[in-house]
Each structure stands twice: as structure tokens, then as C-alpha cells.
Image (cartoon, rainbow, N blue to C red; front, side):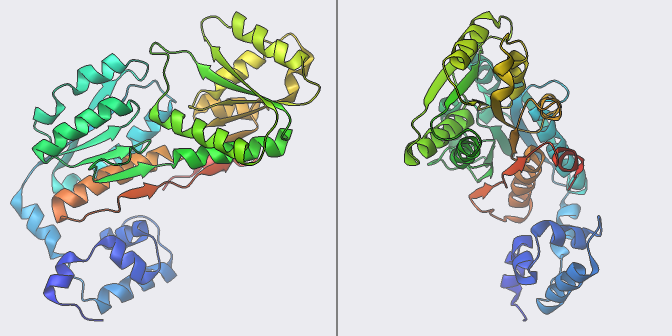
Length: 362
């Protein structure tokens, strides 16, 4: 299958991957001769490269140009072991692979509990000398404002964490929040039935609001319950990590007034807070509380290993950061336009597979 010069100039890694029947990552590893690729897959990729007469001379042209590309990653500040540490690991891995193309990234951190913090660090972002922006979309309304500013400056931007439809972002890499909420509801009702009590815990923050992703998950969760005619009771409670007394009292009242199992869910990565609270209950029935949460951060996996959490739903945060940076870079370097929506796999984790999952690296 020979291609014209114009076609060869437009060929993308994803196109080669489709022709070879392998992943884009496999093609990337073959082209750059790094990482493990099975002999069978390597032969498939090399056969396609030969058939299309692939000539990666664009690489040489960009190396010769010595153009510098500055990316910006707008993400929440984090402590060691947090969700966003995994995102930055993915970003840094992508930048390391792009070092020969003079691509760098500057981090702009904000407090994920404070809308004002996000507004402050992004107030003039469109007027700074960035070639592309990676945005964690926790505060949706403000992200819409930033998007309009970037559109005016014709600066490409990519969303991670949660999608905001109707904007001109180059791409989105992350989970389908609504679907992840649906999965949680399905797991929950399989465990406790359709007539049980479910605690929906919101961890107190300064803004008393929910992120875009949390909102989407809760919508998906409640939509599934409605469609499957759940006739139990939902109990929204707020947990103040500095003062558990009120939340403990509410949970104990729920337990005392039900004869069956009780479920509990947190729609961000802090199910460990609810797990810790349940350990403080006076009633021995707290062992009947089935907890479901999100993300395989250390505190959550510790709670799972201690049999406090039954399921975690993970969305590969490192891959979101990695793919987001690669998409921006491929667009800037090679004018390759990614797919608009790139949903991450949603991984259902239990005690028996959590170590294997966390030990896996792409």
C-alpha cells in the first residue's frame, strides 16, 4: 500500500496503529526503539511502515529548527501519595520523551478547595508566553472563562480529569464521569440490594461545592438508581475531617434504623475519610457498611487492604497527564489533531488485585 507524498505527510501514529492492529503506544515504542514490544507486534508495525513507505524525516526537520515549545499544566497542588501526584508523573514522563523536541512544561498549581485560588493563578494565563495549556477542570465555570480567553489567543488547550462539552478544547483525556457514577451504583446495589440505605458523603471544603467530576459521578449514580427502581434511602452527609462528631451521630442513627446492610460512597478520591470515620463508630454493625470510592491513592488502598473499602474505581491519572501532553505536543510539532474525546478505561479494583494494579507501569 503505497501513499502519495501528501498522504505520507499526514500519516499519524494512530493511523499506523489502526493499520497494524496494535495500540498507538506500541507504534511509538517501535518507532523510538524503547520499551518492550513483543516480536509479533513489532513485525506487524514494521510491515505497515514498509507498506506505506513511512519516512520519519519530520523529526529531523523539527530538530534542526531548534524551536522551543512551552507548555503549561494547571493542576491542583498535592501532597505525596495524592491523586495529582500520579498525574504529574505522567506529565513528566511525556516531557522526558519529548526532550529532543525542545518541549518543556511549567506547572501552575492551585488549591483544589478554593475557587479563588484557581482564579488567581489563571487570571492572566492567556497572556503568558505558552504554546499550549493542559487544564484540570475542577472548577467548570472558571474553565469556561479561560477557554474563551485561550480561543481568542489561538492557544490550544487540553482538558483532563473531567470533560466540559461545547468548548473548543483540542481534546479531553479522562474518565466518563457519568459512567463511572453508574458503575459505582451498579456495584453498590449488587452488594446491598435495592432497598438499602446509602450514605453519600461529601468531604467538607472551603467552598462547600463539588468539582465538575464529582457532580458528573453523582448524576450517574443517581440516574442508575432511578432507572433500576431503587427504593432505599439516600443519606447525604457532610464530613468535617477536623470534627467527626456530627457525622458519626448521623451514621449511627442510620445504622440503628435499618435491619440490612448500609452502603457508603464518596465521589472524589477521599473515601479513606469515610472509612476512618466508620472505624470510630460505637456500634459493632459498622462492619456491614459497604464502602465504594474512587482512585488508587495510597490512603484508599490501605483502607481496602484493611477490609474497610470494598471497591475502588480508578481512571489511570498518570495516563491522562501523559496523553494530554503528547496530544498538545503532536499538535504543535506535527499538526496532528487528536480525537476530541479520549475516555480512559475505568478499572474496578478489589483487595485481591490492588497490588498488581499499582505495580503496573506503562
